Image (cartoon, rainbow, N blue to C red; front, side, top):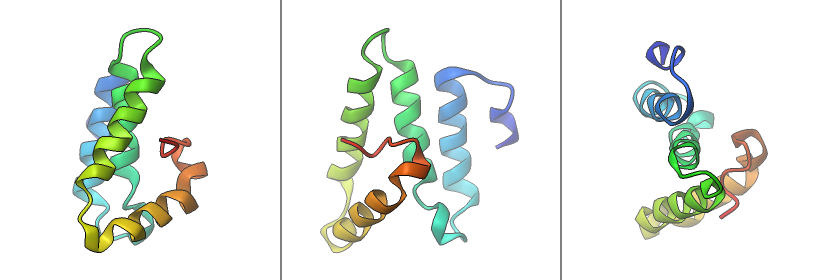
Amino acid sequence: MAAARNLHGAPRHAAYAAGQAAVVAHVAAHELGAAAYAIKAARAAAPEGEGESAGRLECQWQRDQLPKAIRELVLDDQRLRNDICWSVFDC
């Protein structure tokens, strides 16, 4: 997480995504952090004017990877936490 602090844009969001995935697994309320930062990274890395579209594509790709056994649980959690996750789960 500290490595991300001095970065900007897509590299910063990607570093935070990796950090979230690595360090917050023990806190159930933080499980969406890595996914949210990955969507922010996709938005920031996209060409100008295409950030929202890139974010929606990343969000949908993530959802497509969810196993059926937990899909509804994760989608429900995204709906509940979307506001605190920069509304990145509006895809």
